[in-house]
Image (cartoon, rainbow, N blue to C red):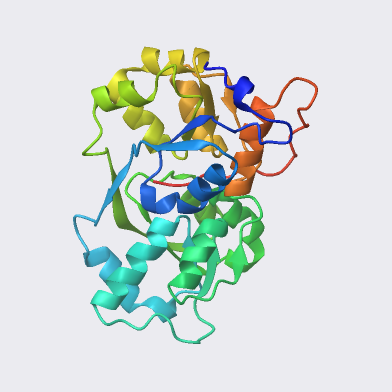
Amino acid sequence: MADRTTRTSAGASALFGRRIVVTRAVEQSSDLVTKLERRGAIPISLPLVAFSTPENFAPLDTALHRWQEFDWVLFTSANAVQSVAQRAASKNLGILGQSSRPRIAAVGPATNEAAINAGLRVTHVAKTHLGLALAEELAPQLRHNSVFLPRSDRANPDLPAALKKLGATVTEVIAYQTLPPSNVDRARVSEVLDENSDAALFFSPSAVNNLANLIGSEVLAALQDKIAVAAVGPVTAAALRDHGVTNIVTPADTTADAIIAALENHFAPQGKKLEPANHGSGATHG
């Protein structure tokens, strides 16, 4: 791993001069990139996931026409919020009324912000930024109620299974597709993820698996001997472990501040490291 400690002046962030590879889409990373730059880090964009509209809009359209019939809408990603809002607008469907139905829950702060920006009123934001936490934290309210769950075609099946165990009537639809990146190839990956980089941030299992498909699991596993590998959320960390990466930096939650804190702690000189906070970890989706 490249050593840039000589560039860091007293009082500067441990990220000063560090090249941090961000594998999330550019439009999803602006807050994180800004905060990295403020600490003197050098963010490098390497989007490993792309998104597209669903192949068939009919299930989503049907659900949107029934919007106020649902007791709850659970959003597990900002992409789901944006896909629902855009489709509703394109079909002139009013989902922004002040009616008490449906109540809306978001998996974390980024999803909550996307919902607010779309004009939706969020009732609950998961304390643990993980889809399954919505079922656990809202169990009394969700039990035997109707739930609309717009998600990616690659979303984890744990949440709908947990909702059905509560007796909820679940309408799960594909709101968007998660695809491999169209403009990133093995050469681009090799150019970015080399000894000149200091860390790579992964935000979803899809990003991990897409990278493994590009460079192979052995090469992916070997990255941990060259650079810091960070996983946002336990599901993403599990995907990395599936490909042989065991030395993983794990932020306390999904926020940009938590990601930066984990990286700063990782790169801090010995004797200045802090004990990681015992907070619930989350996962981004897609």
